Image (cartoon, rainbow, N blue to C red):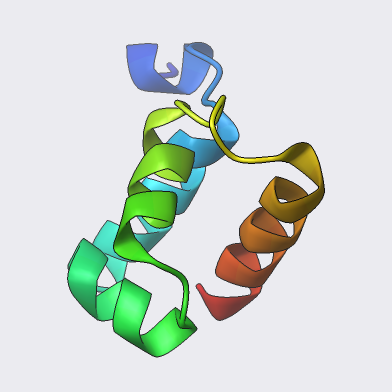
Length: 68
């Protein structure tokens, strides 16, 4: 039987936050190591990316995913 969590689709930010937490990294530590501002990482993980131009956003997400 599947759990309820498996049935709810996750947003990309949720997946990235889950992976970061699984590695035991704080947002600040991930920011230091990935060289992406903590405010940008927070916006990506929360899905509140309206203030980030889409050209940059794609690169940030790609680099963050590669880092994790």
